[in-house]
Length: 115
Image 1 (cartoon, rainbow, N blue to C red):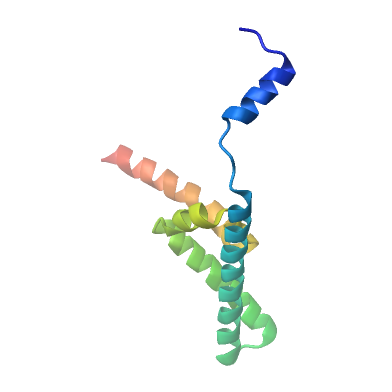
Image 2: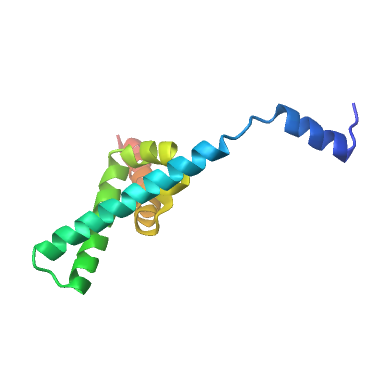
């Protein structure tokens, strides 16, 4: 059966699952916003502990990287990412997840081959 490009595009539209765009946007906004609020709370905590503005910002970045790496190691970051989608790509936490995930995969592959 041969189809023209136009017929093929219509076929793809018909059989492709519909993306819940509105829901995805709202969840990404809520999860990304929650990560940012958490970061602000952490920064306020470091400032209340006596750190200056610059030092509190540095400590906040380090804390968010540590939390993201910990959640990735516990396989919780992936669950949050499946729920919140692009909202988990807030730069610092997304970067930490992107660095830690391959390291965990490599370690688990290396570990199982030595047993």
